[in-house]
Image (cartoon, rainbow, N blue to C red; front, side, top):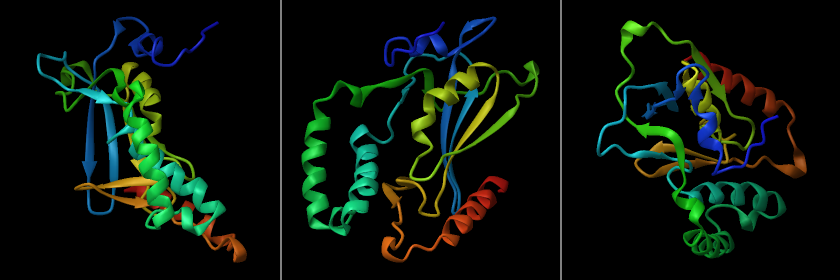
Length: 202
């Protein structure tokens, strides 16, 4: 029976069942209408490589997205862009600065490594679509585990406003678009699913 203790035993999960600990490369791709993060089997990491951060671009940034989602349900004044939200986030960001988790990296993962030798064969492709108010970043450990088993894993960041906070490059983001809760349009969720299906098909 496996017991997962985050931060301490996660490294034991990122390994191939036969060859042991794996080296995983990670790349972030920004296109005009598509943003995704790729985890892939890579060549050995040399000196000077940068470990892949668990939270991108920071732990505080990820928390900002979830505060916008949760607070925005309670009050429109607790949504990104409002003064009350910015004051609350300033406090949260100050707290996050002192948390050691802000520097956590995903075990065995390094930014922009060269892919493994192509002579070893093609790798299966796995596309991962995050759920409503989620992000692609929060599934980094799962992607690393799957990549360690020889797969190429693509974590999509949906840009239709269904993510808590989706990066679009150059420090810009798309935050979750709260529906009109007083006159909720149920068909909007179906349209959202269709939009995300189009992004996956791309």
